[in-house]
Length: 474
Image (tube, rainbow, N blue to C red):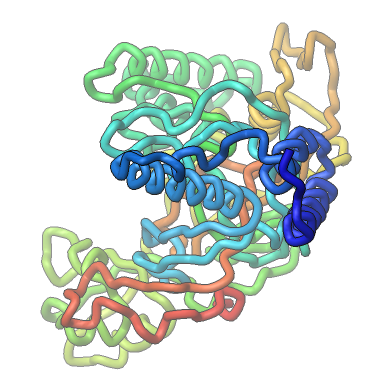
C-alpha cells in the first residue's frame, strides 16, 4: 500500500470541503456516494484512473489524453451550466430594442436559484436535440421532481428573465417553434362548420372549444408529412425564451390601450418599448435613416402592396425621428387592435385584443381561487398541466382528482412575461402564465452582439453593446 503524502491529504481535504459545501447548498446528500471515489483519487489510488499514461503505445496515450480532456470538459460544463450560468443568444425580435437579435447573454442561474435537473442525464450545451444526428439530447429516465436551490434573490417586476417555454411541453417536430395548442385550435376552427357561440353558456362554449381542439389535434397527428412527429418534452428540456416580467404572483393584470396596469396602477413602460404603426411615406425609407433610427431590415420589408406604406414596429424615439422628416413621412397611425389569431385562454371567447387584454389574476403559491365554469379556462392549464392534477368537467360540475370542487389552492408561483416589441412577441398574451419551475435565470450582461443586417467589415459587431449590463436596460 502506497502511503499518502501530506500534499495529497491537503488536496483531498480541500476538494472534500468544497464538495460537502456544494451538497449542503443543494440540500441533497445523494452526492455522498461520490466521497469514496474522491478519497480513492487522492489517497488510496486503488482505481487506475490514469492507466493509459503508463501505456507504451503512443497512439493510446494520445487518444486517451484527448478523451480524458473531453470528459473533464463535459463534466465541468455540465455542472457550470446546471448550477451557475449559461450562454443564451437572442434569436428573435420580441425584446427589441431593449435586447437585439444577435445579442449573446451571460445568464446567471444564481440570481433566482438554480433548479436541480429534472432530466439529469443529458448532453451539455444541447437543450433538447443533438445537432447533425437530430435526435433527443437527453434520456427520459430518470425524471426528478422540481426543486430549486436558494439563490441570491427572486424575480422582480420588470426583470428580463430566461425561462422554458410553457406551451413547449408538446411539439410537432417539423414546426417546433409553433405552439401546438394554438395550432390545434386554429386548425379545428377551420375544419369545423362555423358555430355561433353568442348565446351559449360557459359549459356549451367549453364543449365547442374542446371539439375545435380535438379536431385540430387529430388533423395534426394524422398529417405527419406536414407537421412531423408529435412528442413530449420535460420542463427543463423545453425551448428557452427570454421576456420581461410584467406581472408578479398575486397581481391582477390588465392592458388598456397598450398600457399595462397592475392592480389598477399603470406599470412603467420600458424605455425602448415598441408598438406597430402604419407609416405612410412619400418614398421608401432610406437605408441610412433606418440605421440611424434603429429600424431593422426585417421591419423595412414589412410593408403593404404600396411600397411606401409600412406596417412596422417603432420606439417613441424612432417615431419622432420619422415624423421630423417632413420630406419623407406623411403620417404615422396606430395599427388596428386585434386578437392576432387567438389569445390566451384559447378555449374562451373573451373579445380581448393584444392592446386591450384582461383583467386576469396571476396565481400565487398558497392562494385559493373560487372556480367557476366561466373562469376555469384561465386556470385549468396551471391546475392540470403544470401542477399535475386530473381536471374534468361533468354535467356542469368541476372535478379535481376525482372530487367535485369549486376552489383550488395553487402549489406554485406564476409570472406574466411579455416582450418589449409588443406587437411582434409571442408571449403570455398567447400562451398564458409562466410557472416558477420554468424559470431558468437572469441575464446579467451582453458579452457579444452581432448585427444580422451587416457584414463583418460593415459594423457587424456592435462594439457599444459589449459587456453592457442588462439591469441598465429599463
